[in-house]
Image (cartoon, rainbow over all chains, first blue to last red; front, side):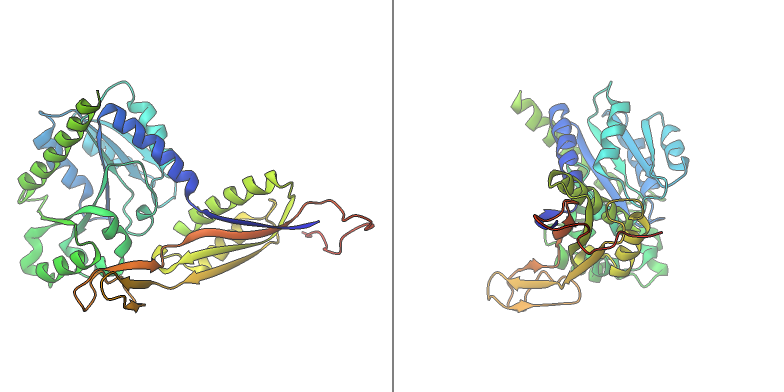
Length: 226
Length: 130
């Protein structure tokens, strides 16, 4: 017998359910969680290395590394004495909420002030998969060209902040910082724009101050709830 | 290849619903995809063809309805369909997305494997071969 079933259900609702569970978990532990998204080679791991170097003495920090096959990024982070869990997606181009839930089992024993999730390098898919994070930060490097926000609006609209990396290359490219900022604000009027060079360290202090404010805010809401 | 992940999610969602409705074979699925999702219909179809053999979806038709990006100004009410999302209207107001972010299964049709009352034998649809 033929049957027509009307659904109207969002495709990713299974993911959204698990993301909400992750979010509740982060809320209970007061862990400020960032989902770091960018193209391959924009400098996510280098930015993390710089950030950890500055903040690891003050806060308990954990890292979840997403990578399609290798453990190279996780090795770089572990080299700094930071607890890191590697997720190999085996070909899948993004992290999803169940992967994070499994990674959290590995990290469970300790509480973190700050948890970085380094997503798989990709500007398309990670935008659609909520992991339960507090916010997304998009990283855009000068070498990629300034047209990326217009071409991949979803990820820049979902992000609370964009970190423009490799600012040391600005004099050698056609990257127009003013025009890119305008494009970003047109997509997401509230977006925070930070300009850094993870290589030279320029702008990293400001980025870390921005992070610290958010960590403290999250801890504040946690103590208020207790 | 996020199309593969999207189709995999779609199949789990429909399979769960089909089991509840005693559907043993899915004949067609209608999927609605907004332009901002950046999913290619050809790749969605390719993923579906790759993942469906040996499942209740084998031989099913995947219908994809693409929705354009439509934005509407909160201030002057002007509706536009820009190629890229433009959050500021020329009047100075803010544009809101009306359409373009859809990603859902609208409906699907399936076979419960039971014959209609009074009908004898097969219901006319041949089982998939090969």
